[in-house]
Amino acid sequence: MIRVLIADDQGMVRTGFTVFLSAQPDIQVVGEAADGREAIRRAAELAPDVVLMDVRMPVMNGLEATRELLSGGGRSPKVLILTTFDLDDYVYEALRAGASGFLLKDASAAQLAEAVRVVAAGDALLAPQVTRRLIHEFARLGAPRPAAGRRLAELTERETEVLTLVAQALSNQEIADKLFVAEQTVKTHVGRVLMKLGLRDRAQAIVWAYENGLVRPGE
Image (cartoon, rainbow, N blue to C red; front, top):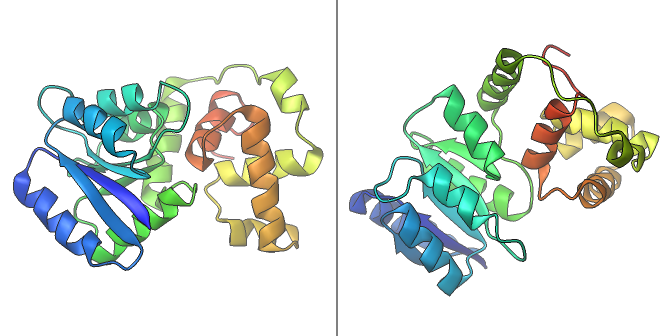
């Protein structure tokens, strides 16, 4: 079972998400929170696998809560950012804060459930339009930092190639097709890349690749 905590300041939204997700055979809603500070406290108490985090909340917003929730080290939940606002800086700051996914509240119920599963499995939930916005933001910020040579040198040639394709938001299956290997082989490479670079998931890998110049906007 995937344990989920829902953080949103609107009670009706929390109720709707709870009713739908609780009906899924592999998802259990273990708690709710009405603001970012409560989300941090409840996450510590309930140890969820995934936190559905609204952006605009009182006391502490979702981006600040995500940053604090994921800064403590140890076993942290995955964070799936939920918002009605499709804004560039939300996408960028959410991923920089450590979120594993970004989903607009107008997504369908089925998309929400699948998003929880994707994030819980350690994959990044970056729809094509979200990836485009992220790339646009990197382009706006200008030149990337010089590549982290020592850490990048720890990767094999194949692992570097896989990381480059991950940064282009390709799925494991798409990468497998492109490299003519099995999907499980790609999963193994991705796991090794994350371990060697000390990254939590694919979302962090995408940010790392752009910020360190492995991939540049437009490539």
